[in-house]
Image (cartoon, rainbow, N blue to C red; front, side):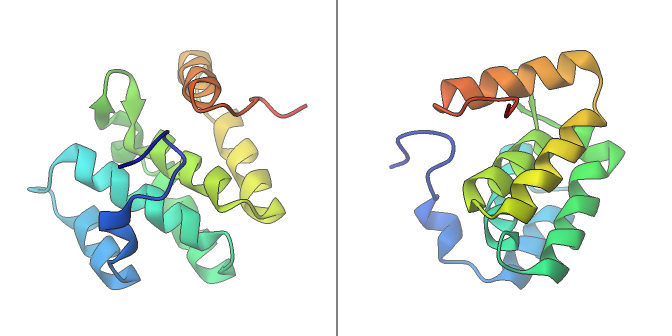
Length: 124
């Protein structure tokens, strides 16, 4: 069981990248599962430049910014959290860039999400 948002999800760690992509592409998949899938993709993208660009596109997709998983947390925000969880400088820099593209309320919701996971955000 996960202790906080940024901990790896054992169920999704067992899936390969194509299975995670498939979950993301299925409109009949639950929004929460889609968010968890993009979060795992974000985590893995930390060490894979090609996947990093693909995940960036998923996070930027308008529909993923509008799909709410729990409360005010969007699929895009979970993907961005995955980038941060991955831990590479490139992924964290991309996360910061993506967050800057969001509206103020999305940014503050994401900052709360990070704070509740023990992460200081925005990084300063």
